[in-house]
Image (cartoon, rainbow, N blue to C red):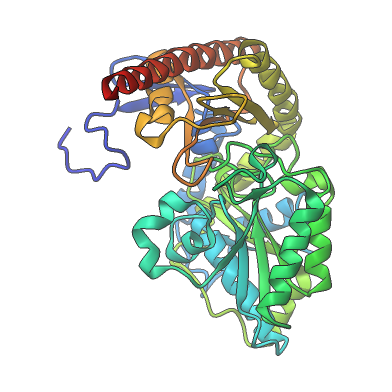
Length: 454
């Protein structure tokens, strides 16, 4: 390899992926990896789908690109009509983009454009939550509450505001910025909106179930209903970030479906094309679209938005999800995976919690289970878990900073929905082996350092 790639990790010699099928990825040396992370919780219909490759090639052969400001295309129109029946949004219209960060930026601008169209020019404030993740562009990063990602760029951030994470496991613990009671969380948001000033808050943005930053942390049962009511009362738009939770990942078509919530705006990506093409979209209530267009249109756009090939790939991915009942498969296999992990790790002294919905499953690692004390960040437990599991042939997704923005480790599992029973067992076994090996080493290292200091 030339070494001219600016890599996403500090690993100077990562394995070279050459092919994939189902739930397995092979590298150039012929080693197989069971993809228990679905890449970055992206791949839902499985790797190596020939029908998706065929649709992609056929569309590119007919028409590969048409700028969205000059044309619409059959593939974009067809996809919008097809996905509408699954969207938990009233009379939805979709604005296609290239991925999650673009989607969040689009949703933020759309919320502002809607209020301007209605004459509410003072509504510009947006609330997110601590320990959230909404993307890495500056607006999306500012909205995000993951402190480790914010730190290098703090001088460029600060326009958005944050309330507590809905994180029952660490509710009320020092440094967690988390609450675990639905009424308490809703009251906090209500007070924050009131304190911001009448008619100044445009939107509240949150993930239905928090992804990698809190390892599939499920909010308290009444949380979303209570939050939705607060937003309605203050005429604040409710924006659901379904980039990771959408398209069956949590065992329902969209994460908010677990609570029967219909947000005003919804952001989707990742599973929309199962990783076969960079694609996402923002879905808005029909009256939001109408208000913005009646006021002169949406001042916004990207070169690759409304992409004709991306929409064709998304349509074929949607067809597969429907035809093979893969959303239900995610629900059932997710229940099975949590059971298997519970059998192997439920009593482990360094496993704080196993949680999630569908095939989005998190395992939080702690130094002290009773006190919920995390390992120090210097121990790099999450990174060690990824390396150990990869050495055993299973790919997992790391999480850090869960306890206080710095300390606290987890792994997140999000395999393709086509994963088999045998593969689920392998995942559970390898995760258990990795947790045992890595935590034993971390404890031994900590003990040696303590002895050296005395």
